[in-house]
Length: 290
View 1 (spheres, rainbow, N blue to C red):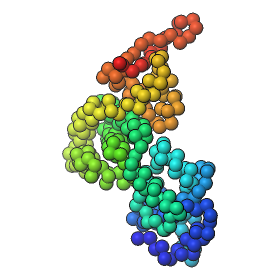
View 2 (cartoon, one colour):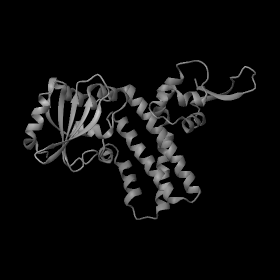
View 3 (cartoon, rainbow, N blue to C red):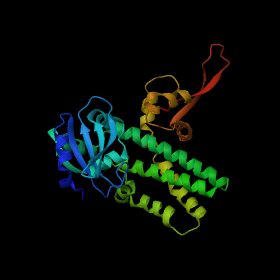
View 4 (cartoon, rainbow, N blue to C red):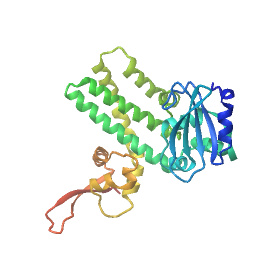
């Protein structure tokens, strides 16, 4: 537990600052940057600007870390997604004080993921699983087993985040502890990959099978967000237009392989488009299937 009693002077100075909205003591067992071996506090300030920084404060020969974040930055994260470490500090930390119960309300909201954010995150994590899955297969074909293992590990991590978002929760820094409760079968696959004594290549090949099944069975619900973006206009989309679209690029959705798979599963249709005045430059366009 945090030794809050030893930091009274520091905490009193925070209470004297009008902009401070809430203070959370980060437990010593949560070893996420920047809190490793030092006492740490998350300080939420009522500021309309992007404010996110760390201060090292020396009090009575002890260094205290103060991680500061603005309400504005938190509210932006509630719309676009929060950092996993930040979610852990807010949910697992010890509330020192909470002006106007802002932190209490924020904690409640973190347990009720908005549907709009959920759709975006499911699409993003699915696209990352797909990308890492293809990378793993390519490395295996080339006989690059360690690279295949690394890519498969990335695929499982993205799959784990997909599971957490699908459950309506925000991923935390210790994501496999969350997944162990939400989807024990995926947690078992993670153990099979990391601690099983089978030959490494055999482990990778075996886990590709359930991963392929996940990609096939969860495609339609994972790409709802992308289809909704494409339905905002009646003309076909070029691949580059989708990749550069604000609503796609902002969330890191990897579109290339995703579009290809959606065409294969008849969720999208292809057409040849003419985009130049001389009608010599042709490019493939895509639109949602009816």
